[in-house]
Image (cartoon, rainbow, N blue to C red; front, side, top):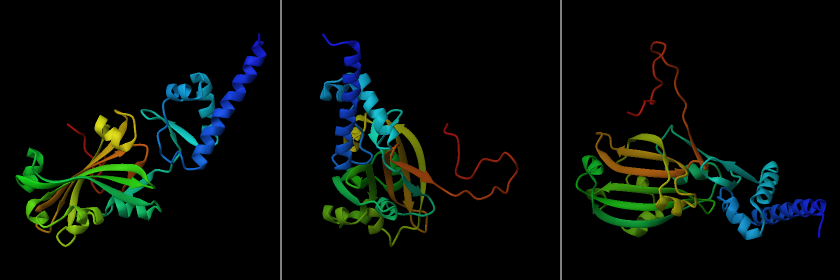
Length: 253
């Protein structure tokens, strides 16, 4: 029978072995930056180790800057967030390229549909609905759904919106947009697409793009995993009385 000291030594060696295997997978790109790792219980089953041992391995990798832990996500491979500016109307692809990330898109749905009540108020009863998945460095980064006015989209093909963003296709008409950003719990369907736990924190952007006459051209919804993106805006100095609300900030009723 092994002594307690021997068991402690085996445990110490095992957590280092687990850390080394995960470290190798990260270095080889098998576990990509931003990728959410299996739960501690799942990793324990995989390595035949207790959760305490798995946690020690992950803590070692966190000390090395290889992994990180965030509320709602568990453990993930360390990655720099993408800072998206709010000073101009640009595409996700342009934002990613500005930060040196590789960008690509995958069209999930392309169809003309009866608009929901909220979309119909902006665009009319029938719209083109395009749902896509955006990738940053080959990892899912955003689920985007765009609705476009039927008269603008009548001649478009699925291939066109695969090659060019809809914002680019209406760039001759588009002048500006109204955009709101909020927090949400990622739905089960979006969680599957984005590779994150269902119910984990996300950011949602609702945007209405309009022309010079303030007529709506597009309505869009963008859902991002909260650990991969942040939004930054420069606020002007307030000219009103002390205690005035910052521009663009309001309480949700």
